[in-house]
Image 1 (tube, one colour):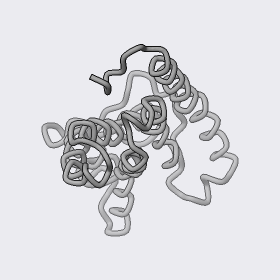
Image 2 (cartoon, rainbow, N blue to C red; image 1 turned 180 degrees about the horizontal axis):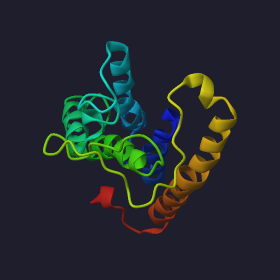
Image 3 (spheres, rainbow, N blue to C red; image 1 turned 45 degrees about the vertical axis):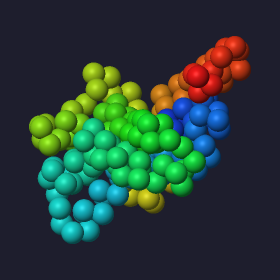
Length: 181
């Protein structure tokens, strides 16, 4: 997995890029939290749930079904998030789904159960370019952690900054915004 904070890159890029008129600050914060939510599955280790188990690390909580479920729950709070249900569903859903997709690009672990519950197969992307982060917090702040951080800067944060910049450019230079319609 990328480090937990790097999972925030996707909602931050999309939210900042789209602007606060489209993605409220509260919805942006919800998207950031939601993007990290799948890694709560590491708590399963405390209960002797194996990594390869459906509910182990990178299992069901990293699936598109989980992303859709979290997005549906978030819709119940759309008014509190200062957003409509459609924006809430899409933004939170993309934020959660991005977690599993980013994990598929790492070069370690057992893959991601992206299609759970329809398949328990663990998948990787064709290119595993992101260095996998250690699960041990102590190792995150070691030399190995620095290698992971550099990899994340190149393969996650840099593309996120590019996407954010493009969205900001389009938002500022289009005469009519989709949110104005």
